[in-house]
Image (cartoon, rainbow, N blue to C red):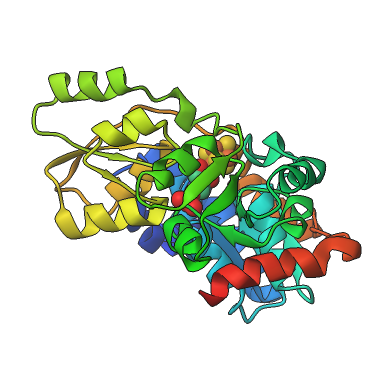
Length: 328
Ligand code: 13P
Ligand code: SF4
């Protein structure tokens, strides 16, 4: 346990106010020194921290400048006025930020913060899909490598996938690599969607039986599901949307009791701000997101590790794929 430095705790007290409902005081005492050091490093280095909704509350509410879903993080990355961007999220998010900010230093605190979806498909796989369905444009989920983006026509996130599909005005599209996202979107459009067999290792664990169990155990509960969940889970849920859309749903509707079928830090981050909402929390953790900690964010700012670099041979094509999405 960190030594209780009264000045340090007083300096970080306004931040603790934001998370006191989800972080007990003795735990905050172990975070305060790193939070304080990160705030100082950000000032000295003219750096910003972009954090995904799945980051833990001490990162999300304690040191992040911009928080949101993958779409918001990509959009905001185009507007950042700083020399250094630290991406508190997974590797594809840092690569996307770097694609949109080639002149800035983009740091990812742990290079092993990957994603099962991004790992499920290669650039060669995309070329094979194109050869098989030459008339179908390729939509790649943002959860992909730069090499896969370079082989694709347009990017999408869970927040705009339907809009991206419909913007193309064609009979059929290839949407990869998330099979469940593709199937969930296919139910909302007349465009035929050819999918890949990638899955998110966190969301694929939820089942329709889990939804039924939740309803039996908590009568009246509101169930929100991320569209990376299997279609039978989304079909049983009350609402499905990106992490930002789920957060907005709780902000506006204030359901008395809710469960978010997604990564479990999301509920902590929203619960910190909504004492009136009762969150039921099945805890499916994303092991990749959880690689990011206050300690390695601090280390990244102190040592400039790990700076994201992009192969120049593919950067332009991948950037266009992301920019076509942002232009919609
Ligand atoms: P969002 O774009 O909805 O934040 O999702 C990102 C992600 O990795 C979900 O698992
Ligand atoms: Fe990838 Fe799933 Fe983790 Fe999101 S939750 S980063 S999709 S493995």
